[in-house]
Image 1 (cartoon, one colour):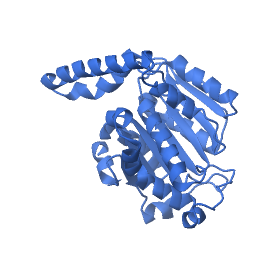
Image 2: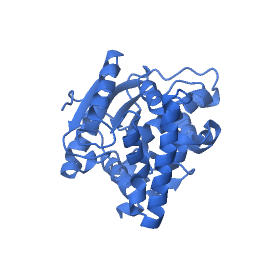
Image 3: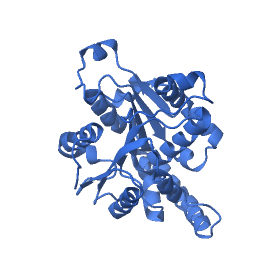
Image 4: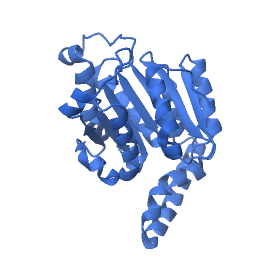
Length: 299
């Protein structure tokens, strides 16, 4: 059942999937009047995330917010290293158009003159997973703002297992993680190629021939946005791909810039695996409290 979760969604582009609630879901769901459900959920997955793993998040949100449409935006190594901005614009445009038309109905008619959304309450719940999801999110926001010429809607942000820093070892782990289900005769030469390409890539960064993409992501995520209401970092000491200290430094810098920051540190969960601990009770409790603005959270 979980493995087919993504296949039941509408695939709007190679990267974008949409789930919309049924009329029955809307009729039977009850939310407290002081805290309505999100109008939209944007889920930015980690690089090469498999459908069976993405399904844990989709089903969790369907249970928690059954009346809220969910966009799943997937990430691949080509998105990170190769695809041009025009290609990314084509891939992400279905979600951007939907978000704009749903939350900016006036601006949709007059995109160059409409005022930005000034409501105090968040409307969108953004869930970002790993550096791959962070890259897709930053690209998404940039294209949204340049395409619609309006401010991004009010939102809260969950940063799961991100952002890290660009190191050779962690990059190899990130790019090679999807290979371990493949036969050895495919996995081994592909792994050698990854080592070679990343070696050249990091040498070019060291020689200042290329910019550090992860550093750019870290800076973009902390560029102060009046649309962001609050954020929560979910991370682990046992994550082999993203160092917990790197996450905490980023959270500290975000707080210094005026962001409302919460941190939830796990002790033994792996990369993008915190949702599995204890059946997901703690994880989905974090999401609920952040959306409803309950308490400060903590380690």
